[in-house]
Image (cartoon, rainbow, N blue to C red; front, side):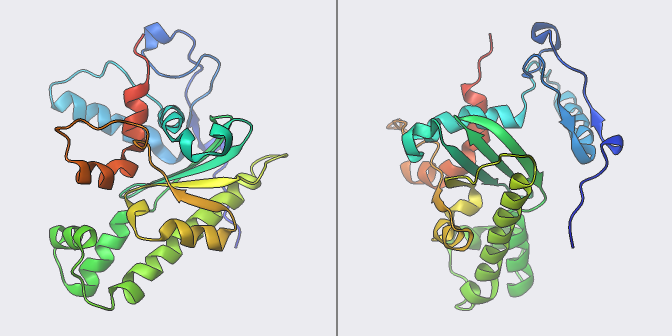
Length: 247
């Protein structure tokens, strides 16, 4: 059954932002910011959280732009550094996932949807009767029963692959002249599942690799190297925010 997007009449659009210094928004002049499916409510919740903490939000960024910045850190994983190539980046979060397609390191398309590693944690809880904390720790550190791979993890990987394939189809149908991405960079906590990038590649027919936004950085001697390497692929948006200009 085809999935139809909501009517444009049911969506809210922010006004064009031209005076960045006045609005303090990381929105490029002439760009229109779409607020799909009530995402503006999430923004209001975040503003309330900042206010409750006694802080003042001085800079508001757009996730797609942060991701675009972060992808400069992964050019070593792209053919010809991403220039004249189409690359897909999928960032699996805890409860939501962002699928983006870049051409010449610029975002052409982005799609957010409800899917993430929390679903795997909840399935571990249900299957083995663990608490949320126990399930999260077991997911990262191992020690689960022998049927975990076949009964819990493999079905979740199947779901991940289906989400990637569905996102590709949405992208290709989103406009004329869309080119199939030449490579997929898999990011987020779920990218640490052993072999998941290879499974995605074999099923969608596109080369895939675990994204490494910190791959070209030198680590401080004080950094916990193992923890940094484990969490690096989940820091995509954070890296993009760290790279943005505050001028």
